[in-house]
Image (cartoon, rainbow, N blue to C red; front, side):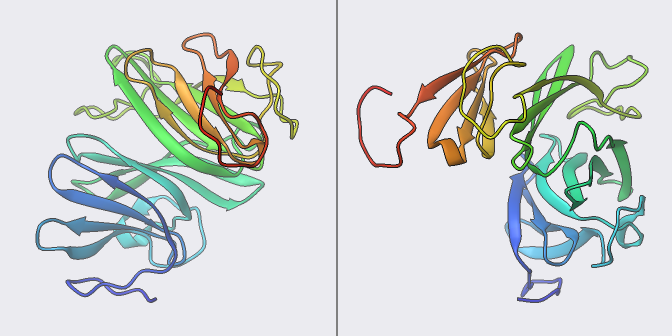
Length: 239
């Protein structure tokens, strides 16, 4: 445990990683309040953003202050997005432009975004979407970047970086319960992670305290239980 760059690096409570096609691994180093980069195959670690100070504060490289939770890198390695959470009442989505190490906040609205724990991007041009799993809020938040020429857009994995994300919808009523239904009626119990089904575009969610796997349909946001009975056990079979 520590905060040291180089071939023999030290981390403090890393919670998430993202890998690019250019042999780089980005790490959400929560304990050090930093975004770290591991270059492969030499395994040399450098600090991309943050120096351990409380934030958030936009800026360049170590001048920025970050409190990362989840991290996602573009396939071309040009951008690294991350959810930033100082507390339950202060959260945002931020991005690092890797070539310049400039850190920018692209979405911040605490009435929508709280306790972000997982962040993912689905890039199917011209529509580009991002999803944030908010565990303590019991919600899944969807953002849309629209087309690359939209006035408020974030080009995922492309050369252009816009000035923000557009809020699309929230799945989950906010109740700590496990109900299927429309995105407004459904509820989750402390969801922890999600991935996009590449065939359907649906979001598959690990609903932690519900002991189930849920599916959020694309594009409607309707929620259904995909697997799991809701009882904490280890059993194979349907549902």
